[in-house]
Figure (cartoon, rainbow, N blue to C red):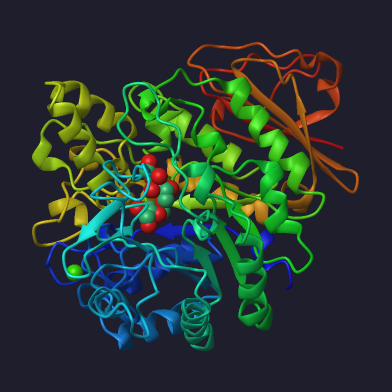
Length: 555
Ligand code: ISL
Ligand code: CA
């Protein structure tokens, strides 16, 4: 099936928090293997695992010190081999996370680069002397603080767009590129089916590292215009494709920061097609103000327009990805739904959207049982470097409480608490002390209970995954939004070859009427999250209940 990555569902595992097998409190590969039957039962087609390579763990594995080795806490090379075999035996493809914008500072390339500027690795990173003790540019790092750090050994600054333990590779150096391609081929030759390419649109940095704009009240400038979607990026991706991707039956998913749909087209539809789909951020910024720490009111109309626009721009030539959760985002049911009063309803409404849009759906571990945000009350509960840095900067203004509140809403650790498997000790995640707190609501929200409950969020996901699989209109059919200005309801048609589905999603906690009278007599109800609505009168659509989702078929 040549369209396997369009038709299938992707499940994402954040290995540190998925399943611990040996009681050290850290999830691992044997733990993943022990849960493969569950993933099979859920009905997924592809598994994306966040980085599993050797890493000193400054950013939970997104700082790689050896691309060829499995991190010992996660298991052995033999465990990886077994994982791959066991996945393929179940017809599940494996997508590895490729972090090639930066390495760890403990990678041997960086160690050699800092010690021997004239040696073969001297030019593997972005080194700059700075001007008389001034930073080479005013860029801020994504995790707070400057993007440049002074290295005592080399007596120069190096660039790190993320943590200072994540130095950026110098992609202008052809030897860097060849090393990366070789490493990519290594994993593909072992049988891996695709890559999720971390911040792939940041590879090219503008010559001279021009200063960015400094906003009021901020210390560092915004370098994004100078390192995202740079001039040489297309060439690098084309080369990557020629050297690696096009020789394999694989999927390439690019994570692209600060990229809108029209920019995205260049990766998706350029002549030799380096990327198959993108993880973009536009719909994730709707509730951000000036950056993620600044809160804005969620605006459904804007959210819908973003989805509509990506469909219009990309689908004529390519294909989209869609997600509501991942390891960098808070939990969707807490963010876009109501995890207190309408937990089941809002989680399943969001699932209905995820599984009926014309894009490959990404399900993030725990989403399928409606895992929620964590209520962070103490600095010591934080693990994410981004949240820790944010807290510290707020503490300087004596705003610790406000910081914890915002972290509880938008911080990345919300997604990183262990998967809630059962009511047992530590939610069945580990017999030891978990590296990060388990959400105390695991007694109420856990997988083993939802497996046994036909009317659970989990079983709703399962049923809808199956339903999507059997209805091509929901995968590749056209997408036509209706009532685009409605501030509470997301409504759209999906049509293919004479089959039409109407999807209605109530994003509010109130009953909503919907205009649909003109076509309702020819609709039949096929799916939804309010069980009593299986039948409806022929001449009018009943009002949508809070967070109700309905799918009708027109025939
Ligand atoms: O989550 C973010 C902070 O708000 C984003 O800026 C995030 O850092 C960005 O999406 C890039 O993410 C990827 O690369 C990072 C890593 O920390 C993330 O976990 C990863 O998904 C650096 O490798
Ligand atoms: Ca372990």
